[in-house]
Image 1 (cartoon, rainbow, N blue to C red):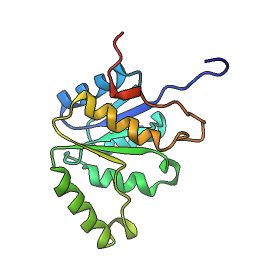
Image 2 (cartoon, rainbow, N blue to C red; image 1 turned 45 degrees about the vertical axis):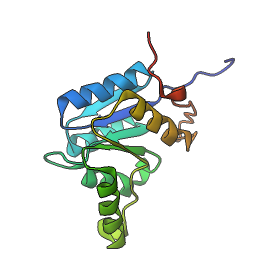
Image 3 (tube, rainbow, N blue to C red; image 1 turned 135 degrees about the horizontal axis):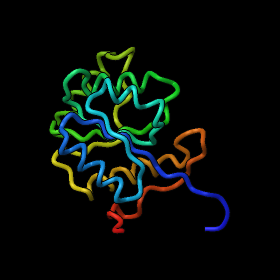
Image 4 (tube, rainbow, N blue to C red; image 1 turned 60 degrees about the vertical axis):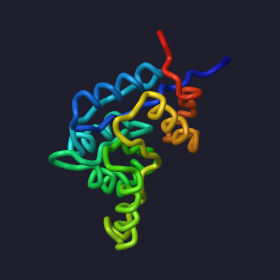
Length: 161
């Protein structure tokens, strides 16, 4: 491609289970993403401003600060409004969506919570993670004010190097 350099997409992986955190990190790095990790929502919130991810892979059930609180704080921050969230959780998809709908209906989290942009049930596969990331990031070709318009990896495959 002539002219201009493309900025690498960034993914922040927030999960308290080290083996899953490392697996998800490796999947995204193999596909050409720049990654950072956090052990819980509290650490994840600290890393948001410095790392400026395009996508957060977020577990829901974590010690210290869980995923719902992280999501609530992320969505309340105008500086992070373009960050996409992919929930990766052992909570069954239907159960999660029902709970989220209840939270929204009762006006939880400052008058309602905008939910995640995607969902993958644990245990995730590389294909599931990259497919959802491609779908989510493809919805917004300019995820932040820096003009990063690079698409996620095509067809959800892991790039071999």
